[in-house]
View (tube, rainbow, N blue to C red):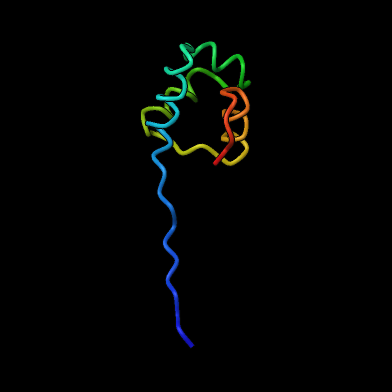
Length: 69
């Protein structure tokens, strides 16, 4: 039997979030309002100081109009 190693896909959430937000000409405050998150939480995510939970990712994806993947 062959064994396969699965590697976790690494995603730079901080850079992706900033790029998506800026591509939509959204301020951090505007995204905070649309997502229901605080501007401080968004800032920490964009700076890579914290990792968002899955529920936070869903809120951000919905506010940005993108799929969570």
